[in-house]
Image 1 (cartoon, rainbow, N blue to C red):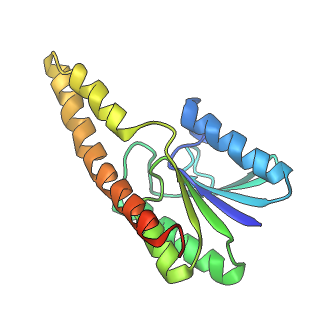
Image 2 (cartoon, rainbow, N blue to C red; image 1 turned 60 degrees about the horizontal axis):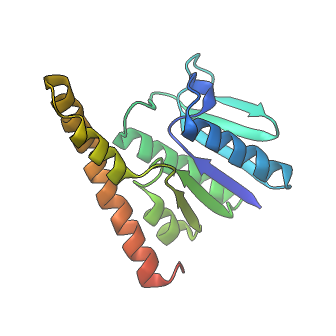
Length: 171
């Protein structure tokens, strides 16, 4: 199978948290089982646009950042998927965290590609954590910043979940 994993952050960005390690284990594990895997992620710190590590192709999207969701990221990654899918049909797209929530429904509808969303941490949990920490001025700032980024993602993930339930997981 030809699989695409979409994530805004990867080990190549110099971070080594749960999402980054999850992506690496998922990609290398699927590759070791004979699948062709492409990881699509934000710009590499040194400017490179591609890598091949452990049998996995990594594609870095220039002009984007792992630090925030941005319309440019979603537009560019969808276009790259669309072009790649016309050249070699992609069997499934896996969005790790909210990396592709901006266009997953579109990929299913327009391209007919099955999609999977993995949310390694709870968005609601992020909001709860920020609310509990809002005891100082900086805590209130973090709450505002978290709310600004998390609420739209919650809305998108709820929309995707409703669509999935309504269609029984079918395209």
